Length: 130
Image 1 (cartoon, rainbow, N blue to C red):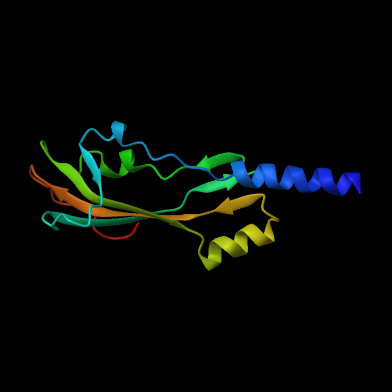
Image 2: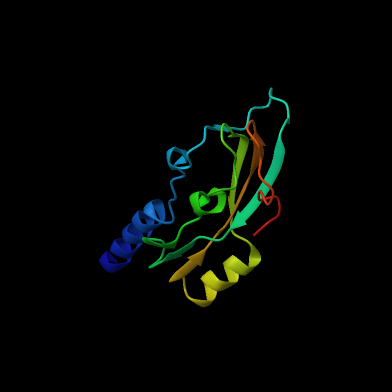
């Protein structure tokens, strides 16, 4: 019984600490505010889907969803990102890959959406899923 208890404890510990992602807006170079139910929807809408990948049962991040690369040169001077929503989920494809690799690879699907307001939004600002 002791090996089973140890295995269960390790599983709970790894599950609680695995697949964590921090979204840090301080590196984007523009002000960012999260979605607010009282605010309007002025500005240019964007919606971007990224696919982070975790390995070793979620203990290591292999690919992070990086908004810095996405918005580099895309938002004009004095612009801001508002009404930002982040949706993180596992799609059927993500679940299939996780199951086929016994959890060794664990992809996720993360969708960022919001508004670009202020400044001049340059042509080619992200609006579709990537």
